[in-house]
Image (cartoon, rainbow, N blue to C red):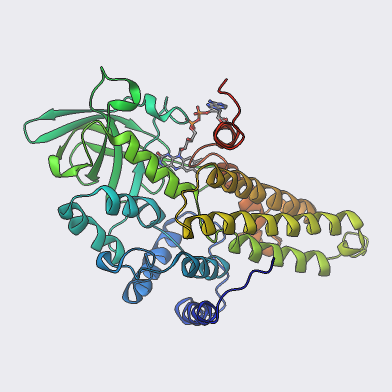
Length: 392
Ligand SMILES: Cc1cc2nc3c(=O)[nH]c(=O)nc-3n(C[C@H](O)[C@H](O)[C@H](O)COP(=O)(O)OP(=O)(O)OC[C@H]3O[C@@H](n4cnc5c(N)ncnc54)[C@H](O)[C@@H]3O)c2cc1C
């Protein structure tokens, strides 16, 4: 089978590429996986360049600030953004919360929240996980109690990415403690400036403040902050998770890194002067990565083609999540391995190879197999829904 993009899609690719060349600083090579204020500011500036073109959320309907981009156009767009290592932020809002509001929000909620996202003004974070509720998310204990026209939230969230930059948070809280655990949860949209919210940073092993603890102490949320029906939040939350897991066009950045690594392996010499490339183990490792990358891309195109035919990918999205996140780990492992002792150095060392990008992704990629549902949980989904194996 031959895959080919149409002439229009190829022209769109050229348009996106030309835009990126002019919008990103000359010689831009990406933000080295950094998670810091500088990277966040670069992301905010970049949102402001995307906004006038309606390219922050181009796949959203035109009525909500998007362009109604077709799925395949979206693949083209995401691939170019990924390959350029464009500084993308606010993915929780653009990728999963916005589409969830479009599906379940009232007209007032759509009018209140969607324009701020597509203008690049309002940053969101995702308040799902709690200290004792991650994989078993439905066991969450944060409580929301109705009091007049408000709900009052008490509890704690953890691993909340970008909470220290976020203007708003979408939160799952228990509204009926007596109901079965999936049936007593509601979904709230909460302004981070509301009194009673405290954000405490957690430093990850890449030395970045990627996520946080978020504490809620008598936080009053008006009824307009309830998304969907009371006690039906779990079903809305899983829609959000489906959007989160089926990343489209997500292999382009890994392709760029692999091109860098292949070039490095072809030109670098080992101690003693032997070219790295003369070692068959090196060539095999690189070849394996290229083959896996093609696989990752085909798996991703499979999900897109299902969606384009109106089917709803389910375990197929889990396959991509496991494969892509573990692929990033393999790629990073080969990368730092080929660099020898230099492989452990980050970008601030003059001895770092390829700007220390592989050392950073070696540590950052650990989290990618946990965030959005761990590999074990995805494998359970694949086993039960894909292979029809019984629940343990
Ligand atoms: C980089 C990063 C960003 C994140 N960002 C956010 C965010 O913005 N918002 C948010 O709400 N959360 C976020 N998270 C949290 C993430 O969703 C959870 O870490 C994840 O769901 C796992 O939950 P847990 O950490 O509580 O681990 P646990 O659920 O306690 O799991 C511990 C281990 O047990 C395994 N395990 C658990 N249950 C099963 C089972 N049934 N079968 C087999 N194995 C099992 C798991 O796979 C894991 O290895 C983020 C996490 C990371 C790493």
